Length: 376
Image 1: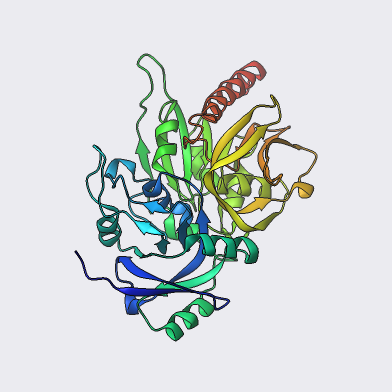
Image 2: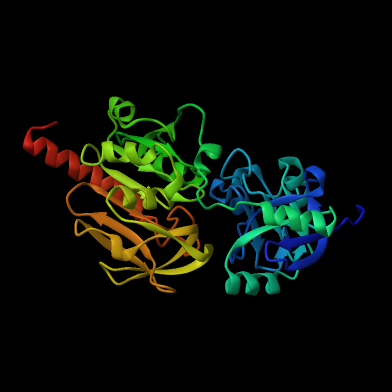
C-alpha cells in the first residue's frame, strides 16, 4: 500500500476540506483552478479527459470513483486538461474486463493531481449555495493553499480554447456504411471530443481544423457542412472564432454543440451569461419543443445563452426542464442549428443521437435547394 499523503482543499472564500493526495504531485504541492461538481454516476474517465474542463477542478458527487478502472479506448482527448479531481472514495481495486489500468495510476501518468477522502456532499452543497469558485488543493501548508485559491483567476474572461485546440489540421476518415458516398465536413476544434468525431465520421470524412482558422480557408476546402465543437471557458473571451462563424453562415450548413452553440448564438446577436454553478452531469432533462419529448442529456458548461437576447430570426428548439435554460436553437433564415448539451454522450442512453442525423439531413436539403436555384 502506498504511503498516505495528507492534503487540504481550500476554496477562495476560506472554506477548508481535509483529504489525502492522489494522482500526480503538483508543483510545490499546490494545484488551483475553478471548482465545479459533476453529478454523473459513471464515465469518470470521459469526464476527466473532456477538454471542456480546462481550467477547472472536477468534484465527483458520486462517492465511489475508479471501481472499473480506465482504458485508452475511453479517452476523449490525447490528454486531460482539467486542473485536478476531487473524490470521496477512490476505489482500491478495479474490476472490469476492459480495464487496463487503475484511475490513480492514470492520473499520475497524465500529470493530473487529485484529492480523495473529501466530504464531497458538503462541498457540493457549498458550491450550490455560493456558486462555482476558485480553489486550491495539495500537500502544501494551508496558508499557501489559501493564497493560491485567492490568486486563482477562474475562467471568466479567459480564452481557454487556445490551450486545447489542435495545432494543425487532421482528417478523420469516413466510417459509415459501405456503399454510401461520404460527405465532407470541416470541424472546428474548440476542444472537440473523440466521441463526437466518431458520430460525425458516420456520415462524412471529417477535417478537423484549429480554432483560429478563417472562414475563407474553410470554404476553400468546399465542405458540405461545418461543425462547431464543444470547448472550455467563457464564450465572450474566445478570439477569432466568432468572425469565422459570421463568414460561414449562409454559405454552408452549420451545427454547433455546447461552446459551439454559445458562439453561434453570439454571432446571431444573442448574449451569454455565467450560471451559478453550471450544468455538469449525465441526468439533465431537456424538452424538445417541436415534439414535446424529453431527453435525458449529458451536460458540461458554465455559461448559457440569454433567452431574452435572441433575435426574431432565431427559434428556441430545446429547453432544460430543471431551470429553463436555452438548450437548443435554430436559425430561420440560414441553415444553422445548435444544442447546449452533448448528444454524442449516452446517458439516456441515445436520446439525442438524432441530432447528427438532422445535420446530415440539413446538408442534403441545403444542397437540393442550391441545385434547384442553380447556385451549385
